[in-house]
Length: 167
Image 1: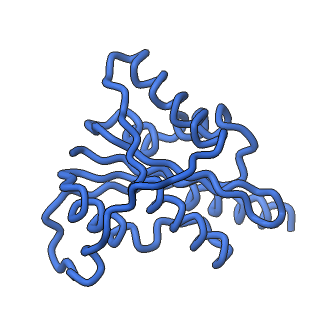
Image 2: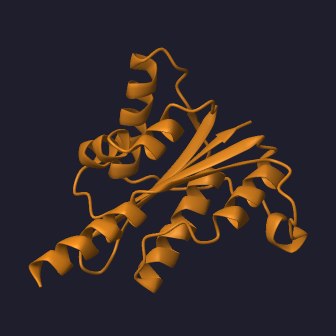
């Protein structure tokens, strides 16, 4: 039984630690999904500010540009966190819709996404992402902007969505 539980936990962690990326001009784009209004207001919490700073500090430390935050992207991140909490999942469902929205509304040429769950600190989640090749590739990617949301569920567990964009 213990081996089965360990195997199941490994699969859950593997799924939760995947990252997604997409370039523009995705085929089969549904314009009803990609059109939208630019969101300009977003109230960042301390965890979001700290996590964004750690990502930028890391990027600068390896010779990359710091990323500029965009409220619209953070809003899309928060929408995804709320979806994950409501559905008790950690995934990239509807990443294409988020990516298409950012491409359409902001004119992005490239979009990537990292998600995570139940890290207690900003340092821990950034370390987790940097220890994962796919997430690290997004953090080190050819991007100019980003957004991030850290949302806490009713049990106190944190959900993280970090979207990168090249604009």
